[in-house]
Each structure stands twice: as structure tokens, then as C-alpha cells.
Image (cartoon, rainbow, N blue to C red; front, side, top):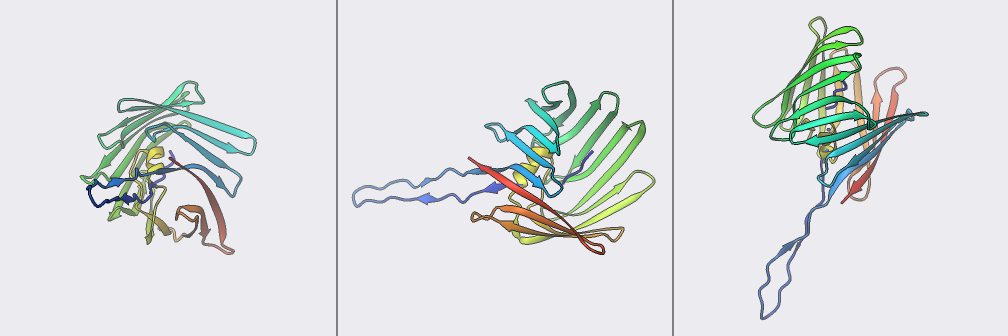
Length: 244
């Protein structure tokens, strides 16, 4: 399973006060706009497109790579979320907690992938462990991720499958808000970071640096990942936003 672990865009609310000599009026607040990531175009030619409902819940994703397109439809029934392949047979079910995050999920895809993931959150609602067990492509899966935080930002992620252990340490731009927080949480049903990631360092010594471009409203429009190596490699993600 892909573990991504981002998104919230809130615009400033303006307080409008109108006063007259003979009458006192009550200040009114302009409703906040919600901005969500509508599309991401990657430098390898792949793109992800997202559709949300009136409650800002993700209801469809479309992934395009070259001439291939994959669509996932998402439906909601109380705390149960069902993913289906392009309007076809359901292949995963997620069970949400009171905060709207995933307590657990089950993927059963035509006998190819049969796994269950169980998440554990702390009292602040931050994901601290994620255990996945089952079968995938004929191989047993027994994966465990554990997460550490500094404030609302994930500072370290450790993976083990019982044989191998691998960790990643994260650094952040503390002056740059993660505007994609709400979109990431809608996609993955787990908490996303409050700030934009600046650098990651793995236990193997791999280093990735991140830089960003922004629009006039301060939302990130491009993320540039530079991977360590000789020569270093660069991968870009271009964001399109939808506000309402």
C-alpha cells in the first residue's frame, strides 16, 4: 500500500464592520473558502485528478499514465468508506473513527491483494503506528510503520517487515504552511503535516531536498524534489487548485 503521509487550505476571513451615527450594527464575517487540490501533474507524465462532494469529501480519483487511465470511485455510508474500480466491484473498505481518520481498512482485490491495515492514533489524533498483514501477489505481508512527531509535523517514520528495518527523518519549512493538508487527509484518511517538508534523510543515507513555487494567494503550485546522487535527479509536481 502506498503510504503517503499531507493539506489544508484556509483563506483569511474578513471582518466587516459597518457603523452609523444613530444605529449599532453587529460585525459580520465573510465565510471561509475551502481550497482543495484538484489535479497534480508529475514530471514523468503521470497525473492525478480529484473530485470532491459538497462536504469536501473525495469521491473520485483518476490516475493517468501515458494512454492508461485508472479511476477509483469512493462512497460513504456513516463511518464506512468503500473504494470501487471505476464504478465496478468494490476492492477496499475503510472504517473511520470519530475524527474522520481510518481506524482500519481492508483491501481484497480479486485474490491478488488480501490485506488488512490497522492504525493507532494518540490522544491528539496523530497516527503513531500502522500495521498491515495479509497476502499480496502470493507473498505474505507483515509490515509495521511507526511515526514520531514534533508538533503537528511527522519527524520520523520507521518501517519493519520483521526482517528489514528502514527509517526516514523529515525536516520542514516552519514558515511555510502545508495548504494541501485538507486534500491529503481527504485522500488518505490520516493526519497530514502542518508545514511543507524541506528535507528527508533515510537510514540508507539517501537525501531529498524540496523547494516550492507559489501563486499570488500563497498556495504551492509546484514542488521540486531533488534526489541525492551523482548527478542529482529532479522530480516535479505541479498543482491545480479548486476553491469554493
